[in-house]
Length: 174
Image 1 (cartoon, rainbow, N blue to C red):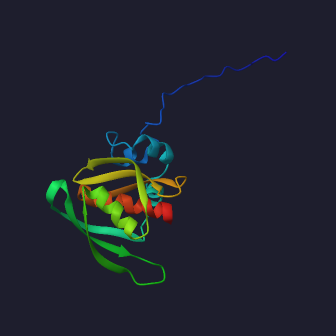
Image 2: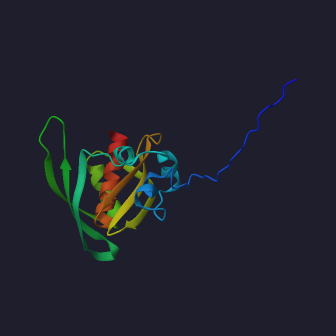
Image 3: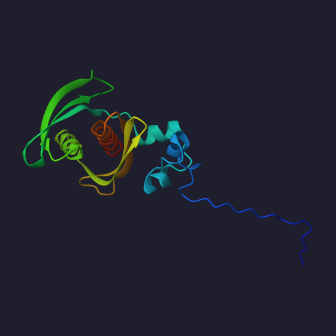
C-alpha cells in the first residue's frame, strides 16, 4: 500500500556517557580529565558556567585556611577559618580548631558543628595542573532523599576538600 520513493541513510555514532562532548569538565580541561560517572550523567551537556553554578555554588558557610599539624596515633590537629555570609548581614569569620583523622573528617565535623550535617556517599579527588579538584556526592544526615553532587577546587588537596564539602552542604541546605 505504501511505497517509499526516497531512501534514508542511517548513521550511528558510538556515544556513551563518557563522551567528552557531553562532559563539561572534559570539554574544559581535556579528555584525560573526566567527571565521576554519576556526576557525568547529571552534568551531561551543561555549559561550563551552568556546571559551576550548579555543582560549585558560592556557599554561605565557607571553610578556608585549613592547616594541619601531626598529632598522636595518626590524628591531625586542624585549624580552619569559617566564614558565614548572608544577604542581610556583614560576613562573620571565626577560627576553629578540631582534631580528626583527615581533612574530610575535619571539614565534615566543622560543618556539623555549624548545623550542616553531611554524609559523604562518594569521594573522588584528582590533580588538575598545579591544583586539586574534589568531587563529592553528599547526603543530608537525617533526610537521605536529599543527595547532591558537588565540586571544589583548591591549591591543595585539603582546600579542595573544604570547598567541595561546603558546596555540597550549600546544595543540600540552600
